[in-house]
Length: 238
Image 1 (cartoon, one colour):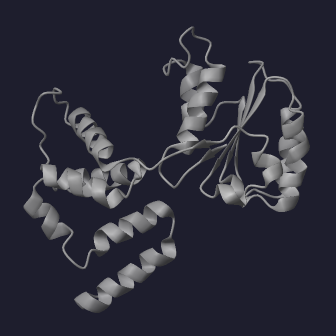
Image 2 (cartoon, helix red, strand yellow):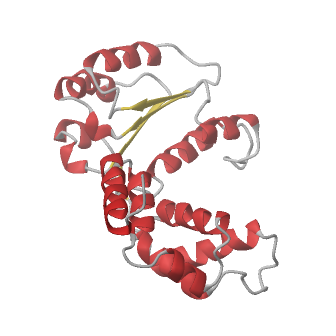
């Protein structure tokens, strides 16, 4: 059971574990073979991924239980249940028996942002790994690494983006590396590299960043609200 806030890599880690279990190379996961790449892309035939937020009913679990009964060509089956807290109580009850007595070489990986909503009957049968928010300093280092790769720069070279911009992106990400990478991608696409350009783009009211963050979180109602505020305060036509 992987738990933690959004954007910490829970589902990505589940796919890494799946790759390690299914990779045929000595140093698994090798990250380059067909099996590893398929796991990372989420389309490996031996990996079942269920988004419980939209497919968490008893019927969905029954289909899942039927699928895991059959052995795969790899001899290993990995089941990834994302947003596991979204499953209904009857669905959890239907899954319990399979968790208690899983088929041979079958692994269940559950990811959730709300571990308190996972019934104790389920969580007590899992090894619970809690993902912590990423510190700003770690996010800054990671963003610097991404920038160097994006611009094909040596590790010792100066970055083409002002330090202030990188540090502010890390601050706004609020511990979520995924959010930080999305914000950085926006900055690079807009070719906003200096502190002056950045402050001009994200001047108060700070709707540009807030809209992007809401979109990342899937809160589309807030996105529409921010556009309404911007239109009202700027007097611009819709």
